[in-house]
Image (cartoon, rainbow, N blue to C red; front, side):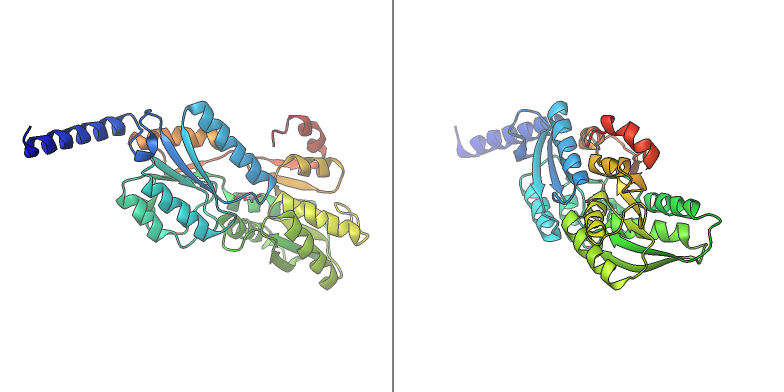
Length: 326
Ligand code: AHR
């Protein structure tokens, strides 16, 4: 066969196989030709019980949905997540999903994904970018609302009581959406009443070890702490150890407000050591697989998918504990 004809046939075959692969959702070279959707997922890390439950949910749902999952753990570092996203682009996965470590600094890499025509789904955390065309949808909690719920519980708890309420705050990872939003929501809820004073606020990076370390410092620098507001359970649980080691009773001498709702925190509530937990649901796997399948086929999806969540007090904790999934 003449050379020109051979290359025309080869080009035709290549185009045909590319189209078939795209229509079956196994479009990228990452697909391995089995027609399964290939999802590249760049996770934040393994900083908390919440995160462990979230990773488990994503892995299990991918398995059940017949999705090939390429998973990367960024160890709480933005540069690792950027590298992972670039690698997913190179592998030509069908969809990229990620939980951004911090809110800003994503435009460049997301433009690369857009140019490669790979849809991006934000899960759990949002980004701070004016260009909303850089991602297709955002699936996750309303963190401002969570902060407000925490503040609302506090204002209700101290309703009609006089005297200053000194609050220390353990913030999540600096620059992350949950840290920024939970802080803002809480401040909004308590700002109407001048008796609430945040006397110290520092990051504990969403980990138990850091929560304990920062609480130890708070206990040394602040002689009169009434309330601890921790942006997640792990930091609250670390702080509880620090409070007990300082000879005080968490939940009584210092009221403890936390966010997430992991089993350990429910146990601490049942033991009277945490007063209230605002729920943040990590079980996003099924919704993520559903969205990934839809966006890979070009189906329209809502720009924002919120998760329903509640608030748990001590009297509800013991009853809810046996059914707690994470
Ligand atoms: O983005 C969700 C937050 O990240 C969780 O509240 C926290 O525990 C996790 O590390």
